[in-house]
Image (cartoon, rainbow, N blue to C red; front, top):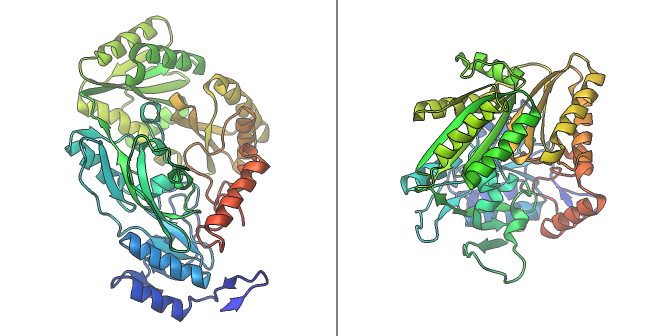
Amino acid sequence: MARSQTGDFEMDNDASPVLLDRLVRALPRNALLVGDAMDPRYQEDRRGGQSARPRFVARPSTTEEVAACLAACNEFGQRLVVQGGRTGLAGGHRVNDGEAVLSTERMTELGEVQPLSRTLLASAGTPLQAVQETADAAGYQFGVDIGARGTATVGGNVATNAGGIRVLRYGMFRAQVAGLEAVLANGTVLSALRGLDKDNAGYDLNQLFIGSEGTLGVVTRVLLRLHPKPIEAANALLAVPSLEAALRLLERLRGAVGSGLSAFELMVSQVYDGVTEFLGMARPVAARQPFYVLAEVQSFHEDHAIERFSTCLMEALEDGLAEDAIVSQSPREFQSLWTMREACADFVHSKDNIMGGDISVPLHCMWTFLEASREAVQRVDPESEFLIFGHLGDGNLHYVIRTPLAHEAMQLVYRLAAESGGSIAAEHGIGIDKKRWLALTRSETEVATMRQLKAALDPRGILNRGRIFDS
């Protein structure tokens, strides 16, 4: 082990035997993996990015074990990458040279639903789907849903402030957190699991860790808010002639069903045609239009939201805001439409020469942004293919382009999103892949403040170093 010029300790190519001995004593049997015992899954990435081989994999199962691991690694200057389900889309979970893995996969304890407070305590490695199923069995609903629900973990969702398909009604993951517990880099445990609706006793430290991508601490337990389960739900797929028509339809549905409108998704025709063929399914709506909208409504008590939803859609057809539409008439039809929408990501990533941007733009700027970005990309490559889909209702689109010059073209897309008052990372975070563009949507002062927080909570820089910004 050698001391650097800055005075920090740096590890040799292999982990220190002394550190490994401390970790062996701190963790249960088989919770520390080294050498050939490290499964290749810890190097996997959904986007095909390359990971280095970790020095070791620590798999704690409790907050106390996480604290012991971090205290030891901090003392030895051993950098860690924190992994949950490895479903992130910005490369934050990929292993860099010299890093070890701290995996939350053994932290799957899930408490009982508390009906009066409508909360549920979940450990960081609990899959999102397990939370959803537990809430459903108790008569409640969890507000966040994403396609990777079976693998994505609660801790990862907190760290990236996950969004998903129902942000329009329930908000981002931040809105679902009633309290959390996290461990700082030096092993200090911060626990704030009180779950109070009103608590203004100083700073709300929970908010520091939500969306921090594991750079400030390791989230170990989360007290989650639950919501009443809708009595009924319905969705509809519409073929619309323009983005302006889609936005007018959104405005009408908001007026007709209010907060009952739980999702409003957009697909361009290339994605709609492609994903139905990709799935081998018949086109639910036969009409051919530039855009397709998938809208969902949830009905509570006797609010007649579904009837008002259907009436609003009929009026939209009569007024030319949509050319054709289908409204789900059964749970099977409802799920079929969502299956199609959720397969969009798999469809576009089955293509070559693609690059995806996760952008958000104020809705009143969306049309201008799409036109300007299309023109900019086509100046780079006139043959570019646009495979855009996403959560139009909250201004978040997955802006996917297909061209051999994708990196150059996406640079222009990000710049135009920023100039439109938007963000280059609506719900996937910055990670490793997007940090070169962080300055487009965060000022020097904001980034400097982030660095100060990082230095204060992780002075030796052992947690997810090089994510969001370089040290």
